[in-house]
Structure formats: C-alpha cells, structure tokens
Image (cartoon, rainbow, N blue to C red; front, top):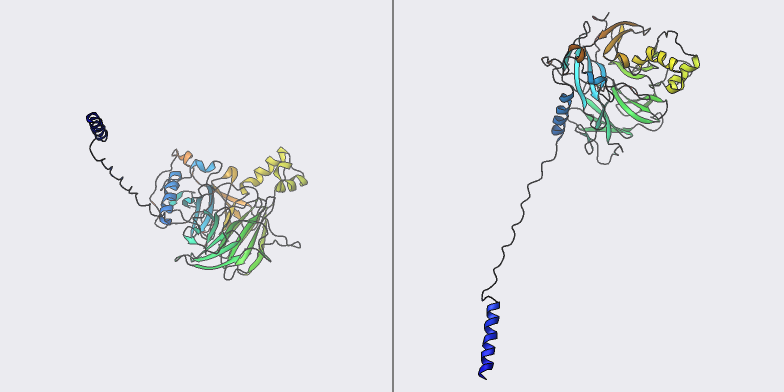
Length: 414
C-alpha cells in the first residue's frame, strides 16, 4: 500500500516536471505589411518630357548643323516646310518602337544654307505618326465606342491655321479642337469614293483632309475629304483622257502652299497641283535626259526595280533617286524641293513649270563642321515645326513638311 502511493506520487511529480510547471508563452502576431502607395498615373506631360529627353540625346538643342546619323538606315526623316515666311527643315522620328515625333528643326537661310535651331513641333498640315496611349494620341482622346487600330498607331495632322487636329485611327478620322482637345466629329474613310487600300498618312490643307493609302504592290494614292462633314471628294486624279488616280509610289505628296497640294509621280517626272477649294489642276512635266535603258526597262523599274539590268538601275537612280520621295513648297516663281538619297541635305530650286533645277542650296552637316553634336546657337524666339524624316521606301510617299504662306525660294535662291 505504501509503495503504491510512492509510485503514484513519483509519476505525478515526473508529469509535472515534463510540463515544466509553466504556461506556454504566446508568440506575438506579425504586423501587417504596409505597402507604399502606387505611383501616380503617367500623364501626357510626363510622356512629353520623356520624348524630349530622348530627342535631345539624338539632336542637341541649339545645333546648327545636320547630324551625320540622319544618313543611317532607319534614321529620323528630314522634311521640308514653309512655316509663315520661313523655310524650315525638320527631322521626324519614324522608328515604330518609339515614334518620338519631331526631334529637331531648323530655319534655313536660303541665301547661304545656314541653319538656325528651332524648337521641334508638329508641322501644320503634315502627317505625324504617334503611338496610342490607351485611347489617346498626344492627349487627343477618341470616344469610348470608337474602334482602335490593331497596330496601336495613330496618324495625326494639324490644320494650317492651328485650330483643329485630325486623328486617323483605323478607318476613322476624328476631328478635335486643337486648344481644348474636345472631340468634334468622326467620319469613315471607306465607302463610295473612299480609300480602297491601307491608310499610311493623313494631311490637313485648307478645308480638306487628305488620306494617303498604299497596298503591298506598286499602288499608292491620295483621297480627299471635306473636313466640315467628312464627305468624300474621291482620289486625286491626273489630267488627260484616262483620269487615273495619281500614284505616290516612288513619288510624293506635298502641301505646296495654303491653298494648293501636289502629287509628284516617278521621282518628279511630273507634278500635278490641285487648288484645294475648287479642284482646279495644273501639270508640270520634267524633261528627262536619255538613259542607258530600254523603254520597257524604265517602265519595269517603276513597278519592280529588281527586274532591270544593273546598268539601267544605276542610270535611273542617278537621274531620279534624289527626287524619289522628295517634297516641295511653292514660291512666287519656283519650287523649293528637299532632295533625298545621295543628295540628302540639299535643297533644289526648280522651275515651277519645267521642273528644271536652277540652283542648289546645301545645308551644313556636322561632320563637315568638325562638330559631331552641332554647334550651339541661341534658340529662336518663335518655335517652329518639324516633320518626319528619312529616305522614302517604295510604296510610301514622304511624310512631308507644311506650307502656310510659303517662304519664297526665289528670294536669295536664284
């Protein structure tokens, strides 16, 4: 009996010892993680600041010469415009990975070719390709029920007086008040008398909007629409019996002055001008020197440049290359034309009727001045505009400069 009690007491003491004789200590609960507030949404001002920083890394502010990088493949494209009474040349970024827009502009001294830096801005009337930010293009936002383009790229053009902006997204043109950015109207570029291929550019001249379209072959044309209600006027057609739509393939579209536009075909072999308000046409024809080509080879070149002999291709390139994709502005007597290809950086003063070259104006390249970045010059008092830049590709016209009351290439240019 005594030993049984002893065993029971021993077991109880051992059990008490095993429990430690103390209550378990409660672990503190982890504190809730405090997350930092999300960053504020990026604004159009933020995006503009980023684009500006990238732009001046390519063309420094105050540069007074053309950077040699403009000669590279996929470089920003040089464009010519008449802005007020000044001739202006600008570099426009066309790299689809960034589409910075205008990255550098210069006013040209037509007597010497000297360049004065101007703040880059979209050229009135001319196409500017931009990436869509959601449903907005540079702060101009299309309605919620409007269709977006699969490529998320919009084509924009400011009216010559700067009061309106046209934004082409997919098959629709949206008109906005330039100052308030309020949406005003929408119209389709399709339908009767409308665009029949893929839109690649938009222009705004006088009371009309022009849409350039191209397909995968040697077909590229321009259609006119009235800005007031979007009513289609139809394609720009040539003079003569055939009345065929004019082609910008290996050619170009230009805003010649505030009341006229023009289509150059086959490297300025011809230039057909149109009075925007009335549709009245005039045609200038260039005399072509004899080339080392058979007639059928010349025709083949304009449809497929690979199907001609090397000798013929070289001959055509020498005579037409600098004018393929060139755009022009009109003076009182002459055309001022920004040349391409081997003559990039040169301006030709051409007779408005014969298209004969009368004079050349050479702009300075930074490499020739021994200054890779360009010498700094005081910024101009008034900002001007910029336009898309780089040699044109087959099937696409140049994204060109604008023409208001165009500066006269005859002044100091002959």
